[in-house]
Image 1 (cartoon, rainbow, N blue to C red):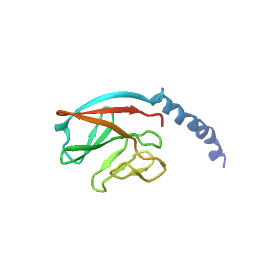
Image 2: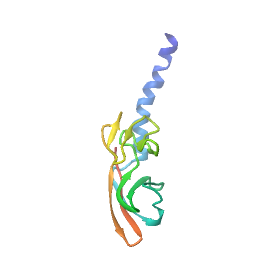
Image 3: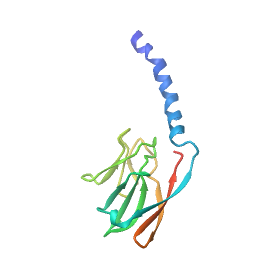
Image 4: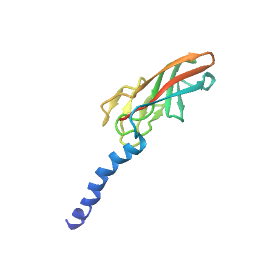
Length: 132
């Protein structure tokens, strides 16, 4: 029992650390950034863009949706599982379908959809840094 109680201060410190870490990662709430992506980078139905982290969903090499790849639970960057055709958060197990709609918690919100436009051979994304 004493051993269990000795970890209590560490657990309390952890509950303060997570919100502080979120503030460091997303310090000022929403910020916008224009990102240009070459259309020839669309190599599959779901193309991962690393900087800033997002996924471009395309049909016949035409983008139909751009998803911000930060999990809406705690901000971890989700991965796409091609076999299951879903986005999976490596931190807490949240899952989203191909449209970014949450299908398994702990998240309660879908992935953020980014607005974009097509300009010749580029996809111009109005990327937002969200305060989760």
